[in-house]
Length: 456
Ligand code: SAH
Ligand code: SF4
Ligand code: F3S
Image 1 (cartoon, rainbow, N blue to C red):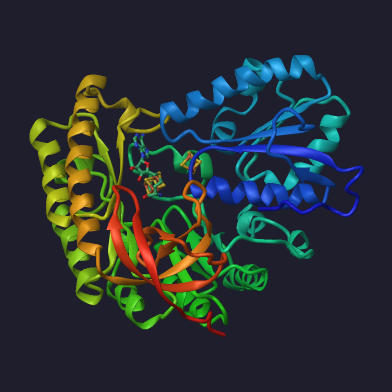
Image 2 (image 1 turned 60 degrees about the vertical axis):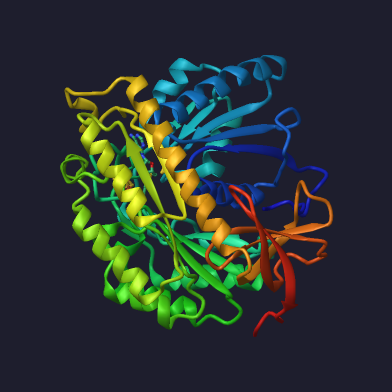
């Protein structure tokens, strides 16, 4: 994102940040880059010429955490060849492990938690004096509320056509499988004024689409403003073409939010509604606080207001104690709802969570077998749904040239389908009406019908 040079390009140091995990971590990486820019760092894509390497880590599943440790293993060699290289570890693994990372990988210079990224200048100053640092202390509500001081936005930056904007941090839900409340702390909503100000800066730097981020966005509440009111204020901003959000919790999806999809022109016809399991007993054990019946009601509510809305979800297979019949209930939900996109995961026990303590864990084989069955069914549904889109017209926001197909542009529909447009020299940020001419498993092919000038 932040590629242009700072003022003292000759003296600038180079930072390489590797980001794992969710959009919240990507957002934090962008914030780290903003902070570091003020410390005269420029971003580099290459580990080899970096003066500073930061791993922004994820611990949502064991696999994600293992990736971090194997990457650290590789960095050990690099540090041995280049002792002046500084290595930092941030994000969710760092928050949970703290000093233990310094013990396990002595060549790491500093470890910092998810609340501490704006203390990077101070940490780097200490690191340059040869100190080892582990800073994972949580800050007072007020301090983390607005995440990052405003100064970091003062210089003009080239933001992308699409940008993320965090509106909450942390989570109060404590689903029994999930590590996020431990790594991100309690839920804190940012003040609406700060969110609006950040949105305006993004828009003036060229952003056309903003995706609001939070672990449970629809429980947002700050200074008397709730989530729907926040959406309304953002929708009013001039030159913001598209607004999305991720992730809402099904328990907080209600009529007022469903209505907002109809009344707010920028709010895209797409929603991610994480189901996790189709069995009420498992949902209870997961501490999700809704039943299949209420989930179906929410889907019906959305589809009543917006029959064409695309719907995606998250599902976990092989949760402790999940029987064949209970897994079949998840399959039934998948066949009934016909989601446009599913993120599916094998349950992975996480340290500190309730579910990790349950006595009835399933074997890796059972989990893999269930995941395979789920993926096969979903693939068929997506194929059928994508084929049904052939011949329909959509507005596409162009993101740029297609990185594999020559002479093609790529973009997304309001429903968030990825589309490649053949033989079209469109520019990033342009809005185009297209007709879908073909369907691939994960994307659509289209031809342009007309350009609609970007409004405002
Ligand atoms: N806050 C978001 C989810 C964040 S984590 C929400 O509530 O939807 C993204 C997804 O990872 C979750 O929805 C869940 O499906 C999956 N996940 C979380 N913990 C997991 C675990 N221990 N094992 C497997 N999948 C997990
Ligand atoms: Fe994790 Fe549940 Fe919070 Fe999502 S809502 S972050 S799954 S605890
Ligand atoms: Fe991973 Fe932390 Fe996100 S655990 S999924 S990076 S909140």
